[in-house]
Length: 314
Image (cartoon, rainbow, N blue to C red; front, side):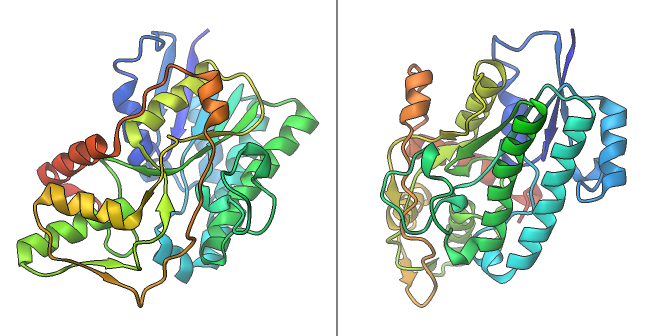
């Protein structure tokens, strides 16, 4: 039987990484056809567009990456839009996934769903144990409801809808917007411009927050593992164990660019200080997996950024 694997958000950061790694993954065979959706295929907030996509491709599996998304400052200023747009997208994908008898849906959540006040490290049983940080509450609650709704479908209809929770993803094909981008792509772009214009490399916040970062190709490999080998219905965190401060990340980026005129603007918000997760479940189930080092991932990402600067999302 041919498997039709529909990847929503297929031209973004993670979708582009999946497109690359399937070329070398020995588990991918000729009976697996990947369809990478872009915005040109339709508006996932609109039912008629979603129906047209399902009618056209008749997917057997879905990797659901599409979202209305941004970095800390975009989320803070657009919480209502983040909630309503993502709720529409997610409900459409799950509802028509059920209606069209999709075998498995893997939905990508985010670390912003984690409770703000909790003991660390966070594991899969703690995802809903308290309110998320208010800076991201619109996006956070929409992603939480995606997890809740997936479990309700599984319980009521026997579907196989699974949530994955990666930590902070970075890599080629990201959005490098100075305003709307996530922390690493924004810092890369800022440092690039600062060096080119001989200005200060300004990092918003104190640099104190701690984060765990996962390279997009590592996440792509793990998503394929979830697709092919992970048979549970429970959510799973996909992350390396190590955490690092934003200050250290910024300094690492400035070292790669060989530009050290860096200052931290403490008048800007830090957001949530910690989101530390446990990857114990992942490593127990997939103990041989090796993560790319942050330095190695940044070197590859910055090289790609420089080579493609004129055409990247920014």
